[in-house]
Image (cartoon, rainbow, N blue to C red):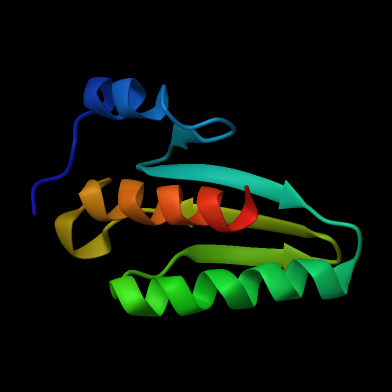
Length: 93
């Protein structure tokens, strides 16, 4: 799978609210009411990521989840990343 160049990524990101491109990945963050809600969201995302066989780089601190998506074996952002970003937005809509 061929990674997108920065211009293509920026064009695709126009359809994604709250996502940005930096350091060869697309990134977003979500804030929740508390840790339990954040962890619950991560669990829902994990099931979708497993189904897609594409897993995020992410971290959680209390009520905030930071997510970065990049297709490591392709060396950049690909359709897989935008597909998972779309699913994440749908889950957390």
